[in-house]
Image (cartoon, rainbow, N blue to C red; front, side, top):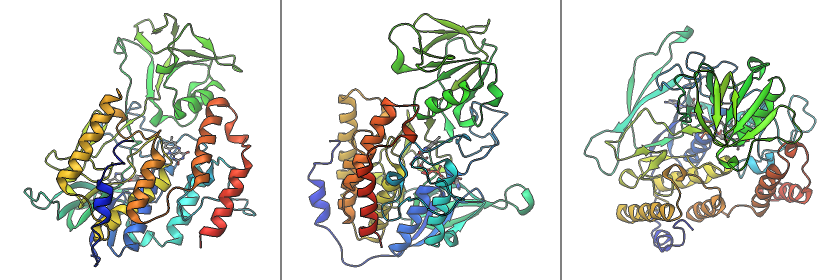
Length: 472
Ligand code: FAD
């Protein structure tokens, strides 16, 4: 599937050079992806600097009660950005054992009552885990905190092999002042790990400009209290849409969920809830406050909450249009990581979605580190480009829009195993795959209770046996 069976794999494995090169590498972002990238780059012998615009590690997992209140839809890319999209009640949507890095398991800390030992812990526990990871691997010494990257570009415009990169950054002034002086530095490689859950994607609704209510994107949702006694329309039925609508229903008068997958028939009440309804998508909004759904029903609502996902956004990247974001496809990228024309100098970690992100970012990072040192070879530019084009044709033939390019719901493990083979690592653990499938099934069948009713204990035992035997 998706171009993994081609002969490039054998070509690549047959070209392993003998000496390793240490490079100067910049990593942008100290979230889960940037941390594991930094660890792998240093392990491979690269001199690594991580640029992080906030004052701590963790990215998405750093909960912030503040929101972008001047722009609750997040329409203006130059607004005063709050990075995280976490809401206060958020618990993981994956069992912790499956979520962790491959060689640093996300296990319970029994006996420590400061920690959240649930199988699906709250967000703070994930941040604690990432902090443990950063401390144990001494990663903070590589990170320049409060330092934002504003520009990444080729040192010379005509450098088509992407050999040297300029990174322009500025450190925040101490005492809460603005940005300090911009500094340009030259690197052999730039690994982009800036996350992709910050720039909201908004649903288009005919008539919305005349509609008098309030709109917000889930990026700016934190707590249900502002929705008390309101009639709220939530657009989207993904993980956030489901969690947030239940959160709000605790205090709101009515919650109406509009989703693409809910198009059949008349609106239905969500089983077990007196004030939640499922609808088809919104057809239009009106100046009298009505929101009309495609199923013909309508409600007079005070708020529309867009749980409609995010856009990839790299405001600092200038590649003479060699890499672009087109309808939420970042490309062209060989195996979602290297732009063929700029490899190996430029790479992206953590773009895939509908995946288990931490272990996948770990494998991508190992691959990037190995390619930069010369331990692992890439195919020629032409071969990589042909692979990307074949992949795009496959998506098209399957009727999938460009925005699904990095959705790996049905092949993340195959992709991970391909990366593992490049790096000479063992493939994805069997228990992790089975745990993921079991968790997905349970989430669908018991959306209200799946986090607290795990039954497949044999998989947990297998996971812990693996941690005991395989991890030093
Ligand atoms: P991020 O965590 O977003 O980190 C990016 C970092 O880059 C940030 O620290 C940011 O400050 C920094 N940065 C950005 N731009 C710049 C710049 N120009 N200069 C310097 N620094 C910059 N995953 C799971 O495994 N389990 C879950 O249950 C789960 N639930 C989720 C729920 C929500 C609501 C969301 C939004 C995501 C969830 N995820 C979950 C996915 C989660 O995003 C990933 O687990 C992971 O945190 C992504 O890490 P990242 O490093 O790619 O990005």
